[in-house]
Length: 432
Image 1 (cartoon, one colour):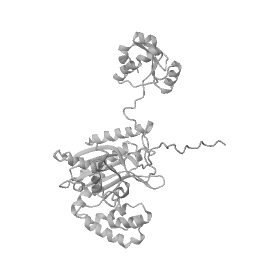
Image 2 (cartoon, one colour):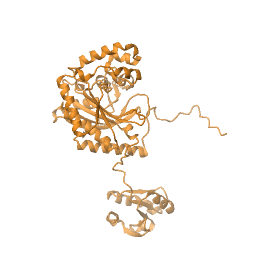
Image 3 (spheres, rainbow, N blue to C red):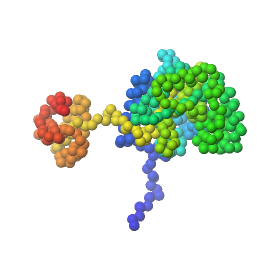
Image 4 (cartoon, helix red, strand yellow):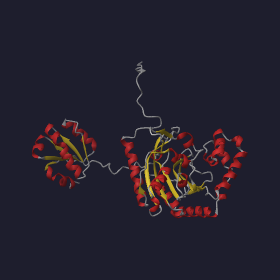
């Protein structure tokens, strides 16, 4: 039996950090195709692009996301610069977006300011299927309006992106967790409820009871989930304006024909949420639900990170990694991926020397091609051309290099014609 060669003890293992991976080949184009589809939908609904830094001041997140959340307690990647600044790799997009809104004076623009953004976020979470320590999100946000129609617009945009990506039988789970007028009474009632069950709560939820009781509603522990079934209903504590706002959001969803379920235990995992919170879920074959997107209103986030006044806002986020791994994902092809119309073949040094000039003619004419310039053999290149499925082949040899022409061959009929390079673009464009 063959033994595996022993690894040199001094040899370093070449690998990416745990929970992070390379994205290349077909997977890269899946991400790009999904981004382009999401971007297209977002633009039609009135959102504009923005990109914020991967690194922000640590307090941007600690102030916004909240003590008692897993992100702040154990998941954030932080660093101290040589200049003494405490920075964090963004664990989510929203706090950085609100920082940008304030810093860039977007309050002076017509409100709401509607933005979409995409990119990697980082959490030192336990890697599992569909979850990574560096993962990707696509977000849409509307900042500067308290109107319920904005909540519906964000949900509709996110829902449409998922549908366009192949999603079926998706359900919006939704709740209202109140505002600053109704939240204190609800938190008091919730805390008292959990105190009655404290002996049955796991250690992590007992700790949350001290720092952030609403996070217990988001617990994944089966015992806690059972206790949560009897927890006070946040909607029972809503102010009159809060009830009106939530009722209107549901009316918009009814009008749009979007299926939804009210879930009184839904709070989302971040402290800045208020009023509407939602998730878009898919029921899997084993009966469990998979959350693919979520978000909510965050009217008090601006003050949390340093604004002098509250700024109403609503946003939603799609987990791109998780979406791409769904069996129904449509594998959206990015616009750059075009099936080659031409396979370019060169033969001989003089032809190879001038090949890039011929390819440049085709590129400027936006004619998609494939090539294998590193090969020399005509037969080898023809074999690759056959496999590529390109309907036409350009053969460029020594004679053609001198005459500034090429041979264009129809791969189905095997008919071919010599064409001057100066006329090549128009000739190719008129081929069927």
